[in-house]
Image 1 (cartoon, rainbow, N blue to C red):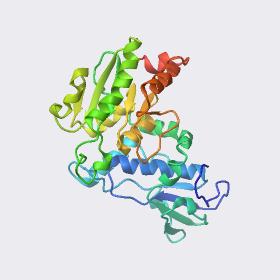
Image 2 (cartoon, one colour):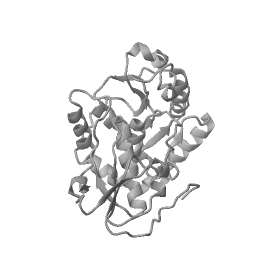
Image 3 (cartoon, one colour):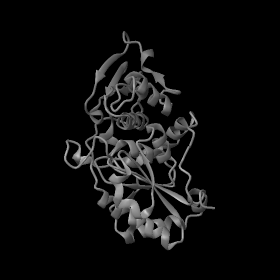
Image 4 (cartoon, rainbow, N blue to C red):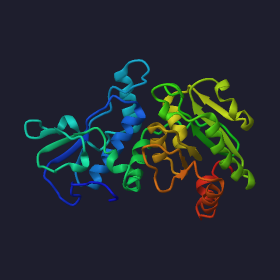
Length: 304
């Protein structure tokens, strides 16, 4: 379980003991990430997951309620789940819990939590218990997969901009173009040495002139694009580089190939590669992956 303060008993079965999302009003990535953490928590600790849809999503376009419904539908979050509206409030007590790991299971109780990151950030490897189910749900809507046409592997990097810059209240989420470029060079040089074509695709907000540091790589600029298309392209990247953002973190959870992780407060899956690792460390990890029996099937599908 890791080094965490945990009172809840995983093996204890409790009659009609439910857990659901309490809502937050954050962005789409943050809310989806929270629900994923609750789904995993419910599975790990033997609670009954009850689905409360995402709502009041920030950074919305048009009608906010409709925007929230679109994200809900995009992930098929409520499919095969018990809807919260079906819980009889006259028989089941609703309780908000701030610290899920200190939760004391009780019969006929619906626990409402904002997220279960205190557990998943300590035990991120446990996401393996639900990632296939999450991918199946996500693929139910059969997104268009309208990925940019490129020769070779698609190296997709998410660069958080828009409401994030080096001087505002979200500066703790900011990474400079220079620091990102230094990380990308380590990846690109590895594939160049192995004569593997790797095309850089930049997913962000702004104008091309805001990313002049990357001009030498002749990237595909995917700027200010439809958020749903952007997310799907990150999920289906051959190589994904995340930002300090739940948006690309969640995409990484659904991505089945190579994920480079930019360190922030949400911890990486064991298979993810720390983007701040040395060139030698990254080369060693990628070489090991190239030598896997299924490597050509997983990573060369857009090359061969």
